[in-house]
Image (cartoon, rainbow, N blue to C red):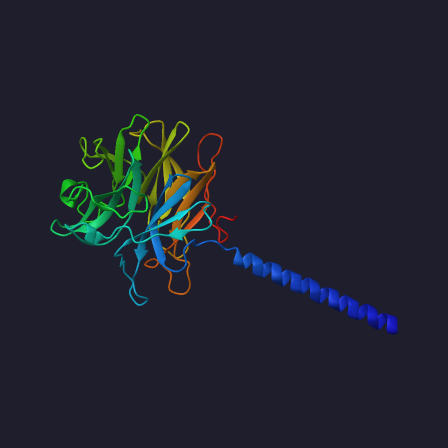
Length: 324
């Protein structure tokens, strides 16, 4: 009987030890949840560039109070990382008030480097011309501070007539092609593009359009190998879809869905980069409890993979995000 008792105590101790180990492992797994990558602020509409072995992430700042269901965005934020896991916040680099002609709304934007300077194409509300507009700021550093590069808007609502809405000139994305020619893409409802002059602050020719299925907004252009990729927010609530081409000016062939509706956010806004030999998909969702949502969003990062024919595999959104 004594031997049986000792055996039983041993089994119970082993079971408790295993349970404790499993609990500890589970706690460690929870601690390794890296999405969203920023949890002390609400961030959205991410864009990113690679410079000197660092990724610089630019995001809008969702500042709507918990009882307000509307976009309240008064500044942009910038973060940097050397490993896509640990992110350092830098001082606020740009606000709509830095554009004297603007009246507010720090909507989606993108930064690109050209000849040692960093050009920031940003969506704001114009102060005197009805509707959204695109301004350009410039800095000698990817972290800023940035200042208005031209003292007026690059794109205003009265320059485009494809739609009657006042917010069709939003979400700029810029690509500098292999021959040095820069292109600006943007739009809501209709995707538009134009060449930029070498100074990066003037259009160089007419505004053109790209016919894309269910285009909503948020175009992003990147290239891998011989293929150009044009991804964008598709339908509403927004998924991300994409098209491919052998030329920056098209024709573009629609390839389907890349990313599903993200969390409890009606919008979806992506950036795609390659960093240290790996490809990344940057997006936002509304997953921070308890007030996260369509107006209080959060930037996330997951891996992106390509098929042998150049098409992109559908992005798997994870809570774990990028691990060390």
